[in-house]
Image (cartoon, rainbow over the protein chains, first blue to last red):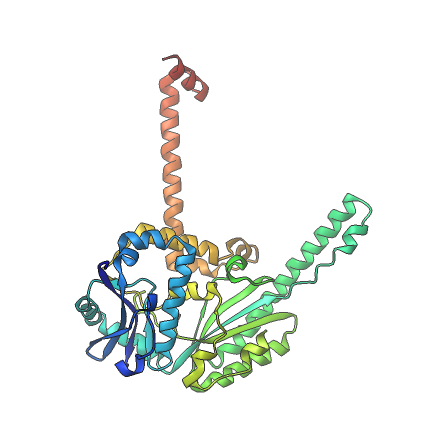
Length: 252
Length: 125
């Protein structure tokens, strides 16, 4: 068997072995808890062939491997966040043994506790605003008489689209302003590429919102209200997520 | 699609099972790659490699051109990206300067001051 490392998914508070029974780690491996003071590291064994320095260097460049690891990592974080205050670690945080995990938890104790305090009882929602794709109608182009007309039509179409994008950007700001009223924190994220996200239209807004569990219904109702108020854009809300975007250490 | 995603604001205990699956890969990557707590593990992938990966993924995740076209540039304030971009730009400029230096040194050394002259010289020798 290949040499084993310890993959750290998240640091939690008040997590018990019984609570994580049934949650499976990367590669179908069992999860273990590594306790240090009031913190608990959620770990599983990984083969260092795959997750050692050489393996990672090779694997991180392969999108299929990255996707599987990212989804596996997220599945564990999600499961933990559903039962205890959870601060996810960055993908591929790996130690040689549990003592090293404990030592790092000790060193970062106060910063991790501060991060957990921020996210406890909160969940993250992802909200995006996208322009609606105009139904492509190829027939007017087909009946155009000349190349010049075609180019004029093309340009008009492009200008209309750009103006539409600008309007959508204004709407996105209104949506954001409305949502921040009920959230504990918000964080804007870069717009995503359609090649990876698979969306149509232009993503004019992508943000994460940290919402207290008790206010999540209120938040969802607010999103729904915004969707109805702005039928000319798509307001795409997904969640709840574990509080990835808000469980940051202060110095990062 | 928005309506169906929001139709079940589930109670907290089961909320995570209600997240639409599979979640969009872009959503997951932007979270697991540079959000959350970042603590150094024992396995250190060469930082340069990680940065290359991050830049690559960012290029995938971020429609830079689209964002700039629309005047959205707040993400430039992201220290991770900005530092890296500046680093690359500086390195690029440095390389250009060195190349120019080398070219002009070579040009004056060959006596003809042109690349063609240099090539002819090396072929003749």
